Length: 108
Length: 122
Image (cartoon, rainbow over all chains, first blue to last red; front, side, top):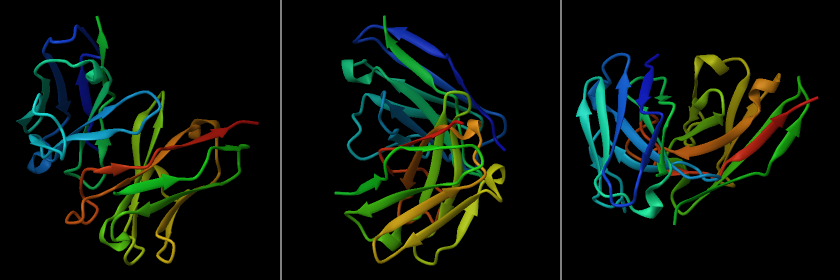
């Protein structure tokens, strides 16, 4: 099973700043089948990015996914108040889908 | 609009079983596979398995093989997930989540249910 390791665990930033989140896979993710989700307390995850870099419907262009192979990045160009949340990566290139442990983006 | 509406919170004793439902609306039920994912403070998000609502075929994560059963009722557009031999470590929020129509169960999740909290305690 592919293990996804996200870093940092917590990111403390101010609104308007840039956030860079990392997701590293224990082996290459087939066809770069990697997704990113945002989760707020008491809510289900929301799809942001699929295929490593494609934005889901309705997702603002301040969210950008990049990377390939084993190293992937989610960048939020300018943090809005509603962006403070936990972010998860997920690989779906293998039959057993796995998630990273999450990065919390908190207000500094 | 697409909606996945799950059944309410459950409290179970160790050794019991729980059955959670997920009612789909706003799209053609048999066109999209439905997955189950659970979330715990310790293990985070864990994929449990997937069901094809069209034919009812399933694929379960190895960790849950033998304890999980996913079924569907096409007449009510509802998918069910039953987990047996519950233990305290199964205390979690359980989500159903939809796969895009073209993916055949091998994809990301574009819509999620609201989650069902299952608590296992004696």
